[in-house]
Length: 234
Image 1 (cartoon, rainbow, N blue to C red):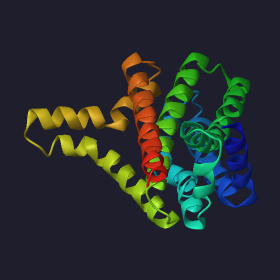
Image 2: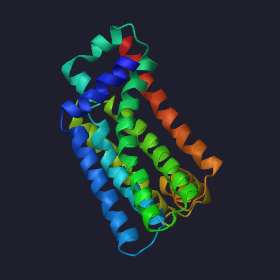
Image 3: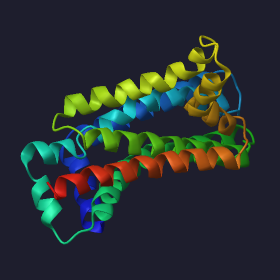
């Protein structure tokens, strides 16, 4: 798993993908930080993290679109499938590399917190809770993108598929008011990433939402392993 992780991590910086992702993510983090904190004189970062929900939805597919689809297109996936490496190690190695890039971008908030501490006294526990929520959201979206990438050899199709899931996640809250069946409403509320994530931005660390994101992450990683398991025995 370590070899796969290091290989994928290196690939992010031998191609423009890693630089593009970090540049765009840092731009929006700085943009929202400037608008909600520096210009308004506030030390409250909740609005910054709330706005990053939408950015993550549409930006993480850039990280995941090539994870597995590129190997399938280049036929190098057959080498991976026959290598002395467990499928879990393969999937978790690739997923871990994408998540590491996401975490690297998110670490900018330690710097932003330090800037706020020079101006006033930020609420560090709340900032930590927001970061935990952002990382959990990133892990779930990365796992979903990894799964979509395993289904196709086209990076474009993988990106579009991940964007489509992102759009679905965005409209679940609006869809609740559009359906009349109580059971369907509850299902949509449960599936709403924004509903689960918004609690973290309020400085709350709810166990049920932590479990939701972790369960979603491992579910899609398990499904990805299943895709490779089926292809191995074909």
